[in-house]
Image (tube, rainbow, N blue to C red; front, side, top):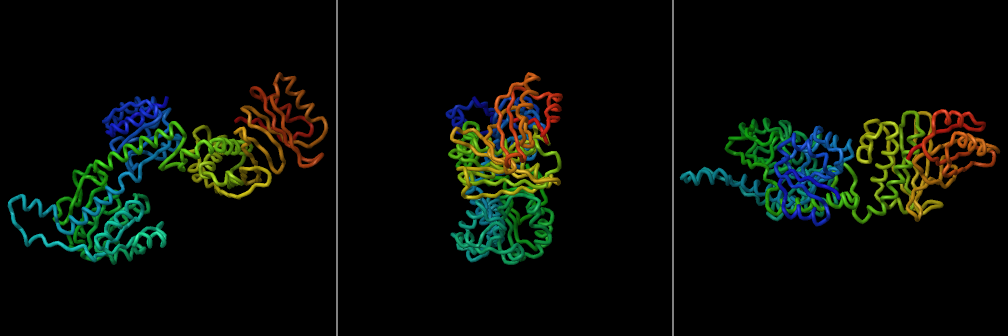
Length: 528
């Protein structure tokens, strides 16, 4: 039975979902703040469910020997070391849509509060003052809202703003013109957004490209009456530059829910009369907190029980429906990659994985990850896994190419892995028959039908009489039993290949005798 540790406060209904699905749950809200205790016990669990309080550092992950999945109830995974988790083969998933409405509504609320100076007017009135003439606001009707990042949350914010009779322009490199039309927004470049917007709201993740997307240079392009709202991520705005612009009257106001350093007990924006601040409340509604808790419980359960992967930030999604069909092809792709990797002795420059037939309609990204894991593991060790392999390939400059074809020549489904090195290019093809067991069906253009065994010998030789007898005698004299023997050849008397499954390991001295046999060109032990 899988075991899940919940180290932050999570809804009782979410805890019950784990239990109802047959997963053992250890509910310890607040444990995330005790790093030493968390590190001491995390190795006992298959899953870790968290919110923002738990910081999953490399030290925590070093002790997470059995951990398979980390589930973040919410969008941001800044508190998880993604590269470290990926290197250990741990799926990291979040719930990107559970609090989208809540966050978008908070951005609109801050915009309205900023336009009418609601917090300042409230504080003044409750202090017994009646400063009716001090708080002169602006209407939002007919004003232009610039949305930076028009994904899930940004599109909801845009929709709400259109309902308030605003004009909406959006900057998002991934927003198509068709999608912009459907949303009712105008797609613009960033500089144009800065020049035209009366209000700017940010809804983009924090990356190297978006860090300080609003800085001093950007502010210089804006209207003097502009107001900036950030409910996305601290670090998208240069807080020091914004404070200077507020002090100089270049920016009319700002409303922030997120900050570079959190908890934000001090900040350059604090204390300015035209700034509204809230303590990261974007997702803080009872509906949103319940939604993300229930979603992460379902997602983690589906993965631990069925192999389904939803909303993973470091691996392609695999639906619960496709997981059973995909499983034998994942095994095939990994074994084909392993076959090629064990035969590769020089640097790899390119890998091509071709999918033909029914398999071409499946989740090929997951299959490619499996093939790369099999390929790189013989060279880089057991730290390579289906989660970390694509990143390891990128780090090493290996070009990875996927090809899909609708119909193979002889099989319902066919996967071919082609590896190009500085010396040569070789390929191996395989399929899955009705019994669900992966098979090799082609090696470098030579047809065969061989299953993968735990211990095998791969031989290339000239197709001459006597080879099989001499080979079998060599192994027999060494007391090594042959389990299966598969052969294929280009033509009579031409190049041939053999795949032989044996019981146990092949000692080095016996391998040397095999390599010394007449007609043998190459002999290599393989393990699957």
